[in-house]
Figure 1 (cartoon, rainbow, N blue to C red):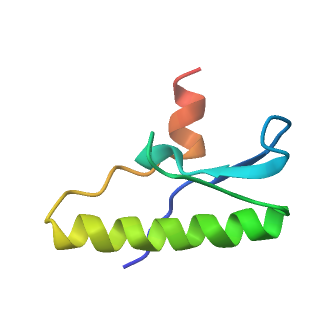
Figure 2 (cartoon, rainbow, N blue to C red):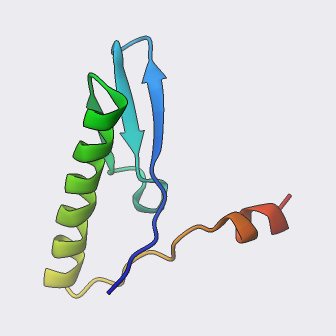
Length: 74
């Protein structure tokens, strides 16, 4: 199954790290890394763990955000 979810990566002055966030799984899906690539890698790991957890508990996955839906809400 293909999943098309969002990952945002931003620099955090407070943490002095790149922070990755999976907005569809808010507020729980955050991780970080010293580089953008490390933050992305960690976010993918978090995403995979969330999918496993949701599946194991029979919980419905959140609806992925899309650019089209975001633009329609402007």
